[in-house]
Image (cartoon, rainbow, N blue to C red; front, side):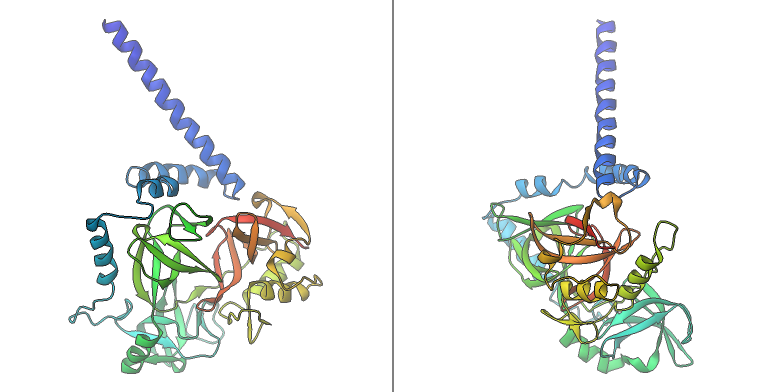
Amino acid sequence: MKFRFIKLGAIFMAAMTAVMNAGTVVTQASSVRAGVSVALAECLHENVKGSLLQKESAAAQEKAAPKNTSSKQEKAAGKAKIKSKKIADPQDQTICGYTNLGIANVSNYLNVRAEAGEDAKIVGKMPADAGCEILDTENGWHHIRSGKVSGYVRADYIITGDEARTLAEKLKKTMATVNTLTVYIREKPNTDCTILTIVTTDEELEVVEEGEEWIEIKLDDENGFVNAQYVDLSEELKKAMPYTEAERSAEVPDTKYSLVQTALSYVGGRYVWGGTSLTNGVDCSGFTMQIMAKYGVYLPHSSRGQAGYGRSVSTSELQPGDLIFYGSGSSISHVAIYIGNGQIVHASNSRDGIKVSNAFYRTPICCRRML
């Protein structure tokens, strides 16, 4: 009997080891297809194992969640969650998370520099009306923090004090921040409809309309729906965006490096639906069309049309200057320029304008090399 228990225990341990090893292989394989290194895949695998103890995958979460109805208790909890974001604490002097608020008073964008000086390196850009925390002020420069960017901006381009607080009340938007590993964005507010795309943790989505079970959001220049329990709602101002230098390496030709630097120089610029002006406003395909034209590649003003040009490359083969296309299923509706380091630059929407994002913030449909 003792031998039988030992044998069964050994079989169980071997099975568990095989399952864990298989999980690692699957994680690595899918990550490599997404253009992520094997080393990072291993790290992701460890994080996923821990996360899965508390959260399920997007599919499992939605399966567990009610499809179109919920109990009175769930509805009450949903209302409390949404309303709690709107009721201000009279003792709380912060606004949109800022205690010493500054707002960018520019027509396009304001450079954020590593040091206080016009010749200092640019580390980020604040779009018009973006908010920041003023940490210190000296010699006409504010030391600020906005989003993931910290640095220095010219003080004469920042609105402060009561004027900033009053303006913030008009400018703030309700945002939905993804609080789980991945979540589906759906075409309609139910689980029986088309999945538009999958977005990843911490992605901020502008809220169009709040509901008890479903939140209508804007993803780039499209609308969709996300299950309310997988996002946190908060009132936010626009934030500064990092200004990322493209990697210069032997594998990246000078033309592609130059193209990426040109595209990045427009970060913070305006988004205008149907626009084709890099100075007055562009939409996603207008942006890629104009940037590519500077390097002798002439594309139509349509993300779907642009996907028919160049040659196909996989996400693991991406190089700076390649185009990445997004949308629903096989239907393309958005395009961006890959800049290296797992990032893209794109004309996202009217709130954010031209910005830098994680290349896999939503699921790519295809990638094309134009140069």
